[in-house]
Length: 347
Image (cartoon, rainbow, N blue to C red; front, side, top):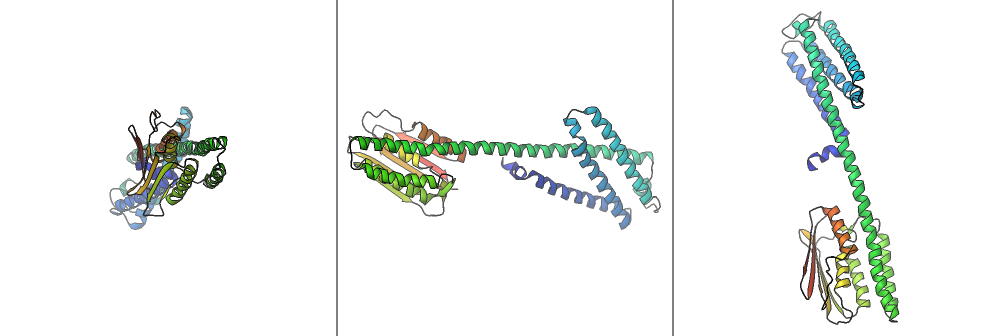
C-alpha cells in the first residue's frame, strides 16, 4: 500500500505531471541530438515536430482508439488504427519535406528529410513504438484508477463497519447500567436517584461525542472517572484505584476505546455479596498509550473476562480496523485476579 499511496490518492494529477516532465525531456533530448547536425531553428522545428508527432499518436491511440479493444471491437480498432497511422505518417513526412527540403543538408539527419524508403520505414517504426507506449500508458492509468476505486470502496466499507461497531457501544453501556438501576429499584435503594443523575450525565457525553472519531485522551479519562463514580454509587463496597500518567495533553484517541475494558472489570470481576472487591486502572503515556485494568475474581467465577461477547469482541474488531497489527491486547487470569492490558500507538 505504501509504495503506491502517492499514485492512488491522486493518480490523474500524478500522471499528468509525470508525462509533462517526460515530454519536456523528450523535446530537450531531440533538440540536443539534432543540434549536433543542424542550426538552432531547424533543431527546434525537428524537436517540436517529433514531440507533437509522438504525443498526438500516443494519446489519441490510448484514449480514443484503444477503448474499441476494451469493447472487443477488434475489426473497428484495426481499421481506425491503420487509417490513423496513415494520416499521421503522411503529415509527419510532409512537414519534414516542406520544413527542411529547402535547407542545405548539414549531416546525417538532414540527408533523410525526404520521402525515401528508409525514412518511411523509420517513421512507421516510430509510430508502432508510440502505439505500444500509449497502450502501456493507458494500462497504467487505468490500473491506478482501479486501485483508487478499490481503496475508496474499502475505506467506505471500513467506515461503515466502524460506525456500526461504535454505535453498538452506547446501547451496550446503557443496558449494563440499566440492569444495575433495575437491581437498585427492586431493592428500593436510596441510591437509585443518584444513579439516574450520573447516568444522564454520561449519556449526554455519549450523545455529544457520538459523531466524533477522535477525542483528547484527557476527555476519555474524564468520562472513565464519571463512569467509576457511577459504579461506586451502585457498588459501595468496591475498592477503585485509578491512576493516570499523561505528559502530553494534546494526545487524541478513538472515541470510547478504553471504556470496554473498564466496564468488563465491573461486569465480571465484582461480587455484590463480597466486600473484598477491587478494580485497579492505570493509564500511562510512554511511546504508546497503555491501559492496564486489574480486578479481583470471586470464588467459582467461571466467566472468562476476555470473552465478554459484544463488549470485548467489538473492541477487538475496532482495534483491528483502527490499527491493524499495530496494537497489543492481552489478558492474564488466575484464581483470584484478572488483568487486561491494551497498548495502542499515539495518533
